[in-house]
Image 1 (cartoon, rainbow, N blue to C red):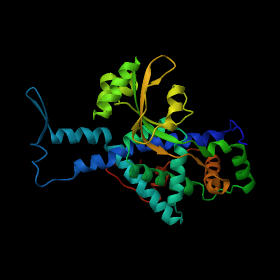
Image 2 (image 1 turned 60 degrees about the vertical axis):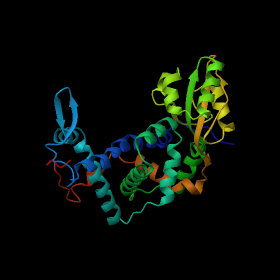
Image 3 (image 1 turned 120 degrees about the horizontal axis):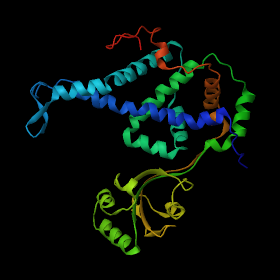
Length: 309
């Protein structure tokens, strides 16, 4: 029988860590995009002469555009690149490794907060996300390398918080909401006839939040808070990349669901998560928040912005 999780700091840390990773990785998506525009292109016009936008008779040059991007995103983008390199050097120095299985575990635990995970997947590629998780794990392991956590502490934490390591099945889902069954049936007919779901959602759906995203509501689970229970109950019966029948919602409206991807739920054993818990408990013992910048002096970082950090 699953024990109810306690309201402890360690409890909150496991739940909060995915959100911290998400907050950090949102900037990572800018890196390749920003660097791509900085790379010279011999076949293209010079940055001073190339026009990227025209408003009436006012022109905006590529050089102006790139300068604005550097001003708004340059410092944080470069900081992320420096931090990634610093943590890899620190890991090599202290002989610390992060395995593929550890990254997979962190990604699975991130799905325990499906709303944040969905937002992240909209702004990052899988490769970018895995790289950020890798860097964060290196940081945590380097910071906790000298902290000793007793096995009985790890076992107790697992027993007290078993439900935190039971990740529900997630469904990546699109949604259209209309105010009558007839409209829902008409929408399904159009979709089966080849209409694009995102276009139709923007045109027809009365659910403003999802309509603005082309019906994309990200990853959801059958116990998702704040979502109509009739829609959630239908998820398991919808084949991947297929449409639901019209589903009457509690408020009288009708929903149409399209399931794009299903990630099966996972229950992690003590052996599978004990190392993860050790690192988490070790992080709690740190007297202050430590960022990768703390290692800049050790690895003699110098950068474009002149200051140390």
